[in-house]
Length: 109
Image (spheres, rainbow, N blue to C red):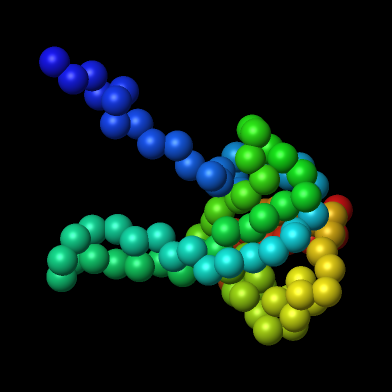
């Protein structure tokens, strides 16, 4: 009989949510959309993987689909800045929009 643990996979990244408000330095960003479902029911949510100078839980890559963060990190100016250096330290914080809806964003740490 085969054990289910035989099929466990390891990931090279952890969720940005797992590190809370810990500061980190952004070294690079790559698109990494989250896909869910199959066939005609497949949906894709824009996401990014963030390589950091620091390690969290033994890895230095974070992933997120948080809209405001993905939008900020995929902006041309941010990607250009990362070509010549790092950004940070930054941290992820909860903010409230003008209509009262909560969202997450990156701020200087």
